[in-house]
Image (cartoon, rainbow, N blue to C red; front, side):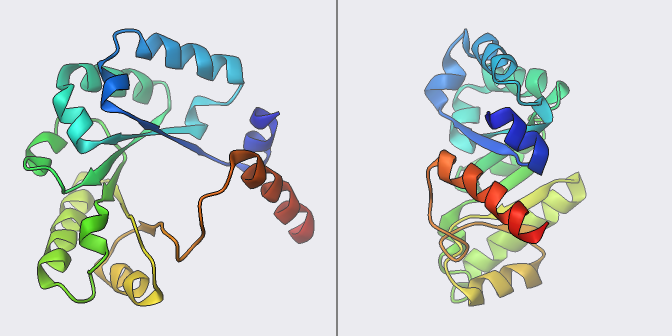
Length: 180
């Protein structure tokens, strides 16, 4: 049922992977089997890997990312900028998106250091052809400031609260019916 809704609306699933999952020798085959069984196209699946999990399981993360990326899945480095070696490791992972750590976003309009970090991350992402997502956007002032700084996307309570998957998928059909 999910596969039809996803295909019909061009929706994308984003799945967080823990460091423990990345360290599992069988995770790649398990993920491939689950995607195939779901009927959801690989291009509709994105994975979010925290920077610290990717670094602590470097070789396995690099292999996992390259294998699924080559089959059409997208990847985001989550909590980017929180680690000590963010930029040094970035060139080793085939990712599409950098999700800027929320600790820089929460006070972006008042803290010049946070703003400078976001600018640096955004500039490096642009040079590498990556998109950026700001996490924890909670008010319109922050959203407007991030747009001015060149961040591509934002997520947070300003846009909505977390909801169960069934509810989100049902709302896709409702929105499509009311606008179609």
